[in-house]
Image (cartoon, rainbow, N blue to C red; front, top):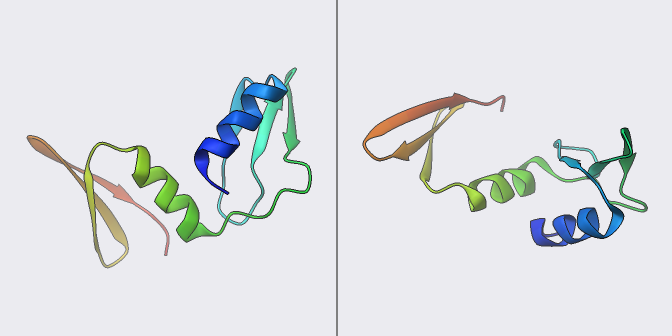
Length: 82
């Protein structure tokens, strides 16, 4: 499932928030309650990572267990579990 598909479903369902976590289906906050996507498939970690990097305006690169994102003029470090 693509991020745009998830966003369209959220808008159509009146969700205020979208919760994406590796290994779980997309979740939406509707009227204060978290609701899983009906018949939603679990999002594999690598697919979620592609979604995240797809909306970042930076170039990610990996060194061991740390993802670094190049942002002009500084470098921001984010640690991720492997």
